[in-house]
Amino acid sequence: MHRGTRTCILVLTGLAIALSAGAEEPVRVFSKHENHFFRIPGLAVTTKGTLLAFAGERKGSLGDFGHDTDVVLRRSTDGGATWSTPETILSEKGVDFHAGPVVVDRRTGSIFKFARSCSTKTHRWGDNYVLRSDDDGKTWTKSMLELENRRATTRFGPGNGGHGIQLANGRLVIHGGYWRVADGKRTLSLCLIESLDRGKTWQLVKGSDLDRSHVEFCMAETAPGRIYLNIREKYTPARLYTTMDLARPPIADAEQVVGLPSTQCRAGMVKVEHGDAVWLYFTGPTGTGNNHSSRRVNLSLFRSDLEGKRWQRVALLHQGKTAYSDLTALPDGDLACLYEAGKANPYEEILFLKIPKETYLPNKADAGDGQ
Image (cartoon, rainbow, N blue to C red; front, side, top):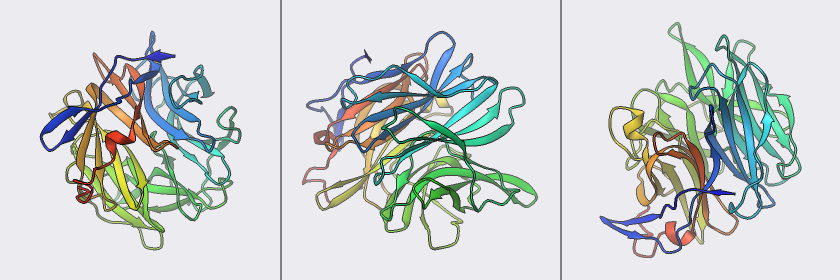
């Protein structure tokens, strides 16, 4: 087990900042070694309470393309205090596997991890894959991801990292992207990919006409069949939100979120029920500036009501260089965050941080604002 430098959680109340009692120490899950770099975290909790931490192991380069990349996994059965030896669950010579979302079927215990393949020589996208585990993440089987309702001419792929969701009716949903033609131009737009039969088959739910959208977005079911999307904006440092109703046509527009950092970065989000209240929680860096280096710093935790329009920062989780993150809820009510961090740049290691419920839940004084 490796542990990183101690990072205290700072709780913000108005302009006041106070150290949180019982702040956890982050645990180093993946760390750069030689020319191997770990990026794009994904985090899930199985039905047995086991934590699964995923990443892409980039061999020879930190860049997004042009090198072999494996999908790797570490498991924790003690709430993130210790982790198993890193295990490669998807690898092929000459292939750059882009790790996609993970989703857990709470009714069966099955776990699904997605990935896109890309040639290291031509940089052309190849097949999409789904890995399945029925034994709490100990072993995995691989199959090609084919969409039952996809047109032969439609290219698609699962989104980057993070996690999918299971709806109240049992549907499994992950984020993804597809290429559509508009005004003679091919545009990559967001879509949802779902399974109605416990992961046996998958289909394209619907796409969007959002030219500004990015395939890196977070989801939460805020009402039966209604999914809130929090989206990384494609062209400017902003975040968008919209709602997709599975019974209606594709969405065509989105609005800018108020109160979240304007950083172009994959974020984490989870829905939390506490008593009669239901909240959305979000993690992302909070830097400002004109480039990734200045924006990707100071990972923070934010809270909103289920509308997801306006957010309030409630805690600074990591001070310093940080980038992509994923966020989930633990069986004991605490939150867990898996995120990229480092000193020279935010891609030196991937850390796990447990966030006690005493840190993030609103008190009676501010429980009513949700903003």
